[in-house]
Image 1 (cartoon, one colour):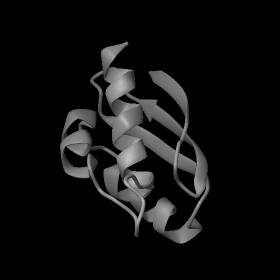
Image 2: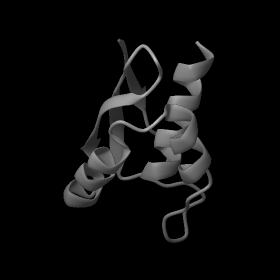
Image 3: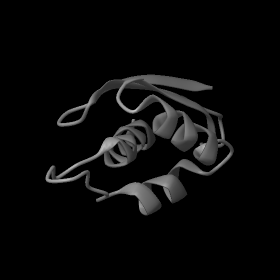
Length: 84
């Protein structure tokens, strides 16, 4: 299992805690800060999904006037995990 803590940038959440199984499926995602219910929902929705698929779906999602969002930051974090 791979465990990663990612410090977000440009969002209401401050950090994302990610646990990936050895086959790069998502075991658990939790956010620190941000919109609690929505981010818990995102965490539940991506559980069991391949990290690559989540990156494809969430990359580029924006929040209001910001050029990023919590889902976009999750995609960035997963991309970093998959690289290293």
